[in-house]
Amino acid sequence: MSYGMEIFDADGDEIFSTTDSTWTLLGVYVTNANTSTNHTGVPVMPTRLVTRTMIDQISGDDEAYVHTFSLSGSTLTTTAPSGSDTIKTVFTVFGK
Amino acid sequence: MAHGLLVKNASGDILIDSDFSHYHFLGKHTHASVTQVPDITGGSTANTGGIGGNSPDQNKGMQNMPAKGEIYIYSIPVNGTNPPLCFIKPTSTGSSAPFAGIILTKQNGSNWEIRVFQSAVTSASPVLYCFAPLSQISNSTSSTHGLKTFNSSGVATFDSRFKPLRAPVAGSITAPTLAHTGSVGSSWNVSLGVNASNVSTSFTNQSNANDLIYYCPSIAHACQKYEHQEADSGYYGGWFSRFSWHRSDIWWCFYRSSFRIASTSSFEVNYGVFARGHFYKHEAQESTGFGSLLGFLFGGAVFGALFLLISSASFTNVSVDAGNYLPYNNSFRNRSANSFIISKASFYD
Image 1 (cartoon, each protein chain N blue to C red):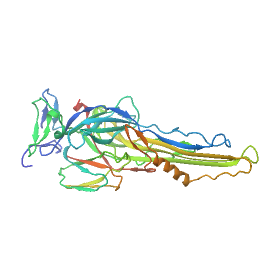
Image 2 (image 1 turned 135 degrees about the vertical axis):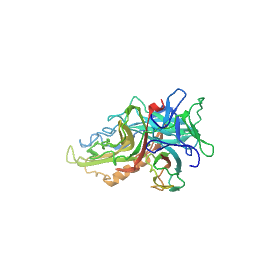
Image 3 (image 1 turned 60 degrees about the vertical axis):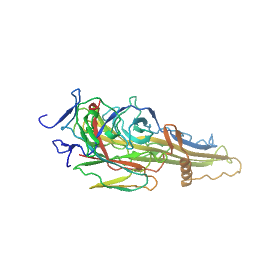
Image 4 (image 1 turned 90 degrees about the vertical axis):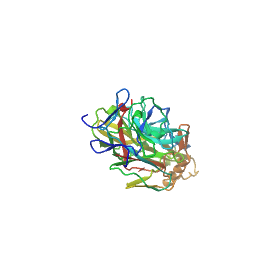
């Protein structure tokens, strides 16, 4: 590389460099089953990515709803589509 | 930032910001067990043998039903309350590869149980490459080389000795609407196999598809059914011998979305058959002389009764939570854009 930064381990293998792309963890937000929640204080970066993970199960309901969401500024708005069949959801917000 | 370290790449993307945590390699995990959702099947047959000669006895099991996928169960040790970020290293890649996705993430003591659904049974098994913030990693290292950053509270946020997450690709992908399009069956022959077109999204070309790993939990699912009923009545053998029969069936499949690396520049999603079932009710009567035949339930009444049977039926399996899988009909849920991240196994092998 002609410019930037490379990080090597003790064996001389490259671990990370400025030619990489990656995602920094901005926050993990949990919305409980069957509830809607606004999460505030979400850090802002030029580009953000939100992933959703369905956590646990509602008594075997693999057919559960997952929360919908919108991210605007520092607020992550999460909405339960159903008041009885929406699963607990973990929102992981990444930035770069 | 008032102090600390901020590293950007040539595109202006932030690579390291010491104010924020970074995901680091937790380990590579193979499955502890593999299972499938048991079929839910059953029915009632009354007096149907040999009556009238045309009472339909065929396909009362799982004939013509599409094959189910399988579920791999992993146990990932990780500290803390947040789940690990688990990337799937698929069993194969390309246009014939099975689809796979994480369908369950569940804390189980100090471990996280992760279940991966794969749309087809294979001899090879998917492998998980898992990541967590440094605060959730208890691994130790004696290495004294590398770069480590701390936030303003003195908490480590980046440590090159623990192989930080490198992610050359990210995007979003949306599952098809229904898993099966077109006719779902004819007479006593069901047709519920996945025939929806794969949905693809392209990404910056990578050198080797077989090296790619992906993080994209399954959230979309679909459920479809096929119903069929027939009835007949008449005379047989002589003027005073009468018959009557009626049969109603419901077949259904429950599908989960799953994913595959289709090429060095293409990520695809479709459904796999997660669970399936078949219930029927078949009754017949005959009468000689002037005896009367009882009337049978027809149409909605029979299907309503079958639904009651199905809703009260459940499977129990030590590896799969009890439940029933005809939760809704001919529809889908959670079909919204699903974010994904792609990395490379060779970064961590």
